[in-house]
Image 1 (cartoon, one colour):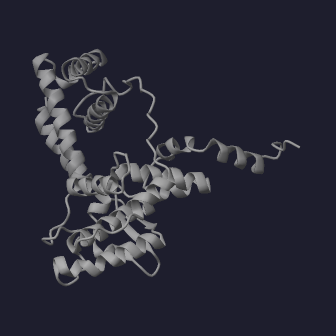
Image 2 (tube, rainbow, N blue to C red):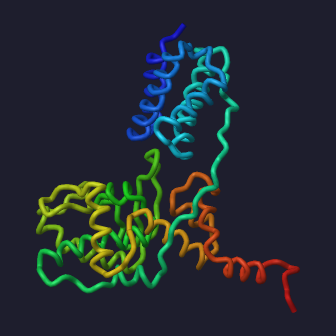
Image 3 (cartoon, rainbow, N blue to C red):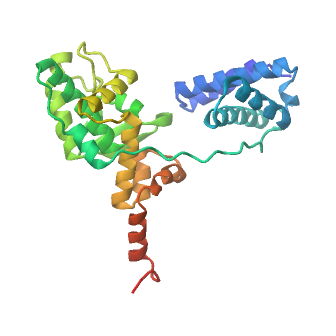
Length: 304
């Protein structure tokens, strides 16, 4: 009989070797420890757990903590993966919850802002004071890259100076699961970053290739919360009544790219989505574009 905590340590170690992100590992540990506590309260050994017990556990989480569907799915995923691993390693004779499924709620469509509003934010005048002008140049470079390349917040935060290829206008991005991808960035983003790099030495000193691209006035790497706050601030300064955040710019990038190109696989690659179904959420955006593509491409679509 194996101690669940011992098995958990072994499983997390294997995940760490597979380069699972520390944030994900921490979430797995939290969810599984919570589930183990439930089993202990119910006097259940792992090999005694049945689908009905898991249903009871999840119902309890909803009742006590008002967890939403996505949180429940995350917890269920951690438990299912751990139990599957335990079965494959013959720590359990079988996995009683292998086929357990929650009824998925319809996935909400991402919010969007139109292109004109984005232009209003990105093309707003510089502030009057020198210090605010310097901060605006940094913030504009962040905004331009978020919208130009569809970056996640963590991805723009982790950018290093060496990750930019100005000649070919390419970014090397380290995304989820430490997966690396190469994405293009546009001329506007290039100009904004180059203007920011003129300010950079005033805050940091000499350029170091491994140094963070986006820093504070004290030369320290910007934190995620700081980037979020600056994005919101610049939207407010532009007079835009939108709760702007980095992921909304990523949504806009994906939707506007799909609307103008129709190339879902290219957008999937740029976003760093492992599954095409994740990218397909953006295909709702422009039904007129879908109709045009259909009319142009299908051999029996002609309306003449």
